[in-house]
Image 1 (cartoon, rainbow, N blue to C red):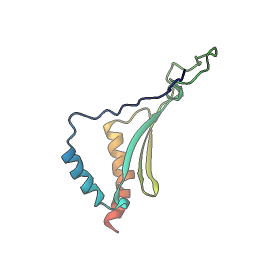
Image 2 (tube, rainbow, N blue to C red; image 1 turned 45 degrees about the vertical axis):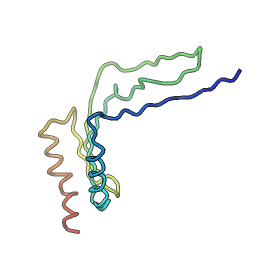
Image 3 (spheres, one colour; image 1 turned 90 degrees about the horizontal axis):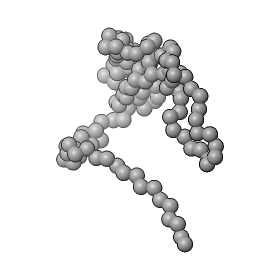
Length: 119
């Protein structure tokens, strides 16, 4: 008897997606020099976030871990990255609010954007 082992992974495509608008976007982006892209993202860290939620265990071995259920100090970071790597970061204790995020954009990230205008 032959056993076939396979994994089927589905890709979910938004039903609102427009192939025409997507193609137009790709054409516009393709004309922009890669040196002009700046990616901005926010992330957070606390002890609870470091815990694994999934894992692989052999049959007969323990499938539980001991972890923290009380959140302690939390830090949030916003960072900007261009083709050369990380160009700006800003960290706050706890979570970002609108004021903190706008401050990070104005004081730390916007100066990184300005250099493209200067060549």
